[in-house]
Image 1 (cartoon, rainbow, N blue to C red):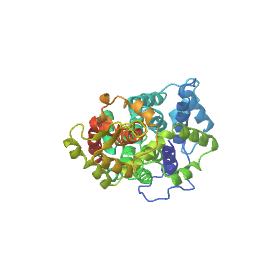
Image 2 (image 1 turned 60 degrees about the horizontal axis):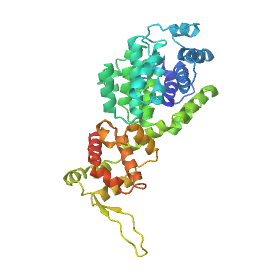
Image 3 (image 1 turned 45 degrees about the horizontal axis):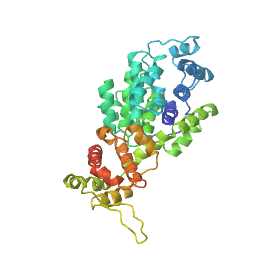
Image 4 (image 1 turned 180 degrees about the vertical axis):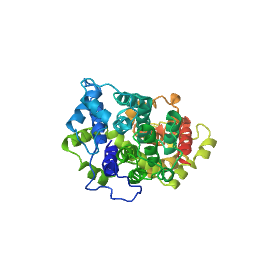
Length: 406
């Protein structure tokens, strides 16, 4: 979620003084965290209480806002009244406040369905208008998909189909006509487009700033998605954290530690996206050869052999000239990572290969399967050959090709 907070800090000085260019000093003495950061941290704290007795989210949100009553930029008038209420009720808002605080949800939830449900729950304590809920859900959906390895094309299609936002525009087209607007339906699509148009985290933030409008919220939403897709450069993270008070730093650090596995995945997805085309091409060139190889043509088993001392050697596999190149190519690709592959396979249903639908896997997930297959060989001779013999290797390579080759 630190990407969202970073976006908020960078965009803070432009909220009421729009800067319609991408050239500017990223961190400035006039920058600070705003209400967007405070509300985001409230969401993070509430999520970290998951599974235990916890206060209602509305109460935690009120507590945080009362501790920081006068943030840079201030709170909206109706939200100020909501903060002060003894029994706060939603007020049918479709303001972008529901989307700017939602980033932690995209990191904390294990499925897209859970992400959307929790996003709606968090939005609805104040912003219960359908557009307010939609803004929160679409932002959380983009973050969840980005940090789980989905492509920009997949993210764009999902948001357009499910939330009916027009993402077939560019920042160049939006910038000249875009004006200040606090509604979700005129903030969230533009923030997502800034991410889609970018090639890195910093560029995404700069593009969001250049659109104008409610800048700190635009950059907050864009930053949340961009971090999940690109990762957050260490120097930018370090500078952003320096603007935060200790109380907020502690929550940010605790959230980062709790969901470190997701941050590791984002780094891996970035690594996959930066893999040279030739590396992929070398792997995909094996597909026709695998298709032409009959079952049983991948592995030759050497039978037990009686030794001079009367003992017997264990049977062991000798792989064909098709399997061996795949092993060499994959081990040299840089795509093998250390992760808890036993637990991951169980969670993904990979233990029963007959029931696995690889077409629903992301590129990163296919690469994780490959890593698990290679590591399995250490504990079970013939694991790699078995993966070829079963047809699973061919299925995975074809899915991976469809995902990688544009």
